[in-house]
Length: 199
Image 1: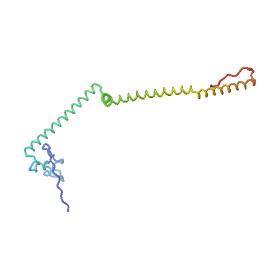
Image 2 (image 1 turned 90 degrees about the vertical axis):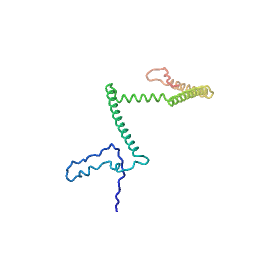
Image 3 (image 1 turned 180 degrees about the horizontal axis):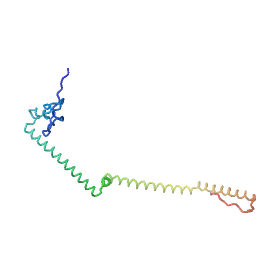
Image 4 (image 1 turned 120 degrees about the vertical axis):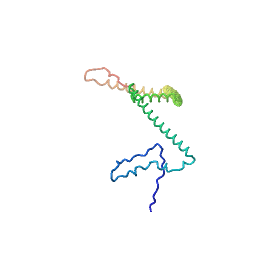
């Protein structure tokens, strides 16, 4: 009922070597030595024709080039790692910490932002908007002060001011009249009280 599925063919580079058995030889109950000698690249060796559109010679040339490129990549990684270690040593000898590097990067980034055209245009726009807002507020302030001055000089305000003055004089005058008839028990006599009114 169950059909055996064959695994898909996997092509490995020629530089991959088969692993030897992880088990010590002669261990009873473990895989026999014959089982561990099966080559890893059996799928590639079993293939008789090169991939579609390539001759056997072209395939071999491409595999050779691939191996060289992979080797160069490994060498470049080693060189880069050595350069990064050397750079770290130089920074340590100079007393530069990672925080100093971060500060320097942030400073450079901020400088780059300030030099950018977008930042300059935004700064100019905000500056112009600030100047216009300042001028508008100045105009509003002068208009308000002028209106208050006009209102103070108006007949209505003068009439109100006169009435407040009249009421004040009546209140202060009536207070003085009411204290004339009272005699102070301390014998202060005829001394009039001080005027402490807020008007």
